[in-house]
Image 1 (cartoon, rainbow, N blue to C red):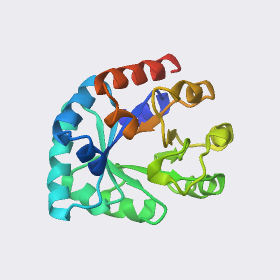
Image 2: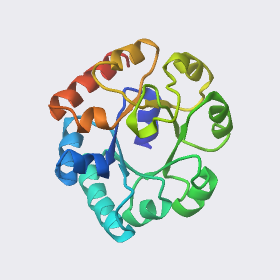
Image 3: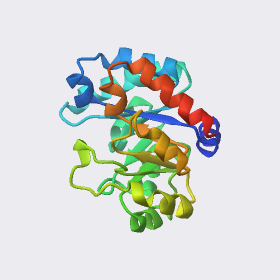
Length: 215
């Protein structure tokens, strides 16, 4: 599969389409997704909390259509059922969600399943599951994960031990991305650093340029 090759090659920019953050920025989620896919974002994740399932499924289905036009990857955060019903490429799971094995029972073996880890113990544990990639974070301080300790100083340990394609997440923006790439990181996940930036297009293009230089 093409996405498997992309995961192995690195240089991937992954943006979380967080419904609450997008609303705060007063942006249209569909126009945003279309533009981001056009400007070079590779992976998308739709994350939502305070909307009903019916509306979430409708939004997810439309996002999938938009993102698939440019053959980019579209995932759903946490919700295996919404991923299945919307025709998404897979799901990103947290520690309290279904296991990878359980998710694949519902979605099938060919879907993409990612997992978030917050420490090295979790990395070792979840790499035993059949996940396609692992996201490590938060790397920097972030309002969304204020209770967790930033992991920047442990990045090299994660890189050394990880056997799956690795992404980093948490407080990443144009100001700090180069420091991560110098440590050996090849893939990044961004949310507020893109959505709340003053010039989204310029931010995305510059992030992609930085990633392409190291891959």
